[in-house]
Length: 417
Image (cartoon, rainbow, N blue to C red; front, side):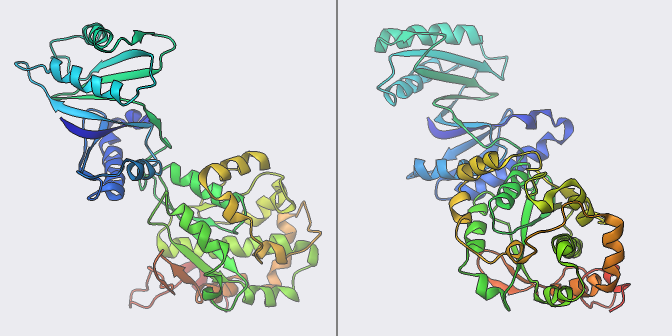
């Protein structure tokens, strides 16, 4: 028998002809986290992922890895062995089931769950439950309790193999990493934006973070909570990058041109424009924010509309209907709450104390004519640095002109400097 982890998914089963792509993404993420130290083969088999555990694997580290994998409905440690019509393997089923009982000495009652993906197996699911249940009672003295049992033993008959396991552990669910495209999250370092980024990661999106900082260089941010939060989120998506943009140029230009009560809306418009251009240059398909409707002045319906109007990429707001307590509970669960608490001069702390709560989009447009946002965005993005989890380096846009010269975005080139 081979020691395994059997991994089940939920909504991937509804993907029709695209299901194989999602299954492969899920197996790829699991393989990347566990192989080769803890896992040998990782394969998709009969609507589940089978992880063959390596000799000397650490179950705690296997659990820690799987707990971070989006797309997992549940997983369980167990055993795997082959079967054939000539050798159905009832004795191996019994031996594996006894191993599960021995691993749970506290159990007094049990129930057998049997499932056949291979209908050619000579025993029905009911036959397996009755025969194996009788065997367990005779060998161990445990009592059968179908409604309130201490131990659930699962037997899954696949095309050529049988899995026996117990003690299922709930996973993150959602969709596998990398199956829903790439996005850019406006990241302040507060409680809300890390939760928003994590929620989109659990929907299969690759989420990179965009932070606007008040320092001369991104090196000054390195020891702050921004990097600490990024490390936590990279547990869910190890490919996530952190883009760091200075906003000093905008702050100087806006000081003389933006009415005090409109500072918040104007700065958010600047951030969205910068995010839009960076996303287009990197081939990212959407912007994510941690906005919660009505939570603060900048998140009224009118101010959200004024800040986001005229964008060419969609904006996703996964916590828009959450109250603060709900966001905090989720932040505690995913490990971003405590790292969010240390004081930090984020961009929000430097804005107006009494902002306009119902900004008129048309008025904001008129006032903005004196503030060349396009030029400020271009200038700020040229000073952007990116942290990939290992190195901090100047950002180089992926989009280029025909002659090979790097640009921020074609749309900004049309604006006056």
